[in-house]
Length: 120
Image 1: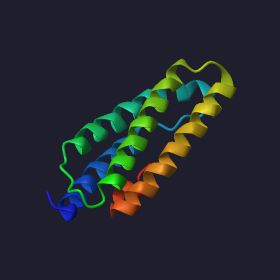
Image 2: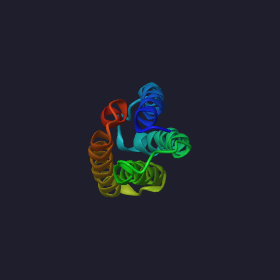
Image 3: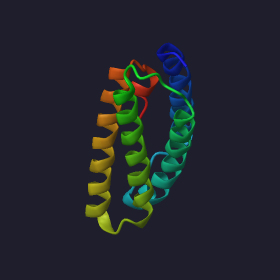
Image 4: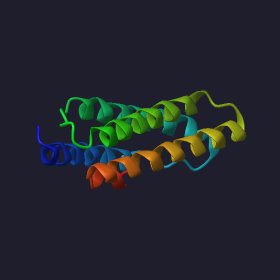
């Protein structure tokens, strides 16, 4: 696949995942985060699996791989929210998820993605 094709297909995957996440009810209190996190984790994890099916050329592969790694980390952290005990642990996990999201968006933008650099 050419880099342009990878960007086009990847952005479709990210947009679909973003649309699905938008349908998940936002948490209103700490306890809601424990159910919200795993739902988001499943969506992000599925998108990562789809992105892994793409065959990026060597050009920019480092940024592509960094984007995937950050997305995987974000999915993992989101899933851990279901077992979080107390507000402090929830906040720590949310902070870590935010850091992964930021790293992922930076790498996605560097690769040339548009939707993947914006979705969250």
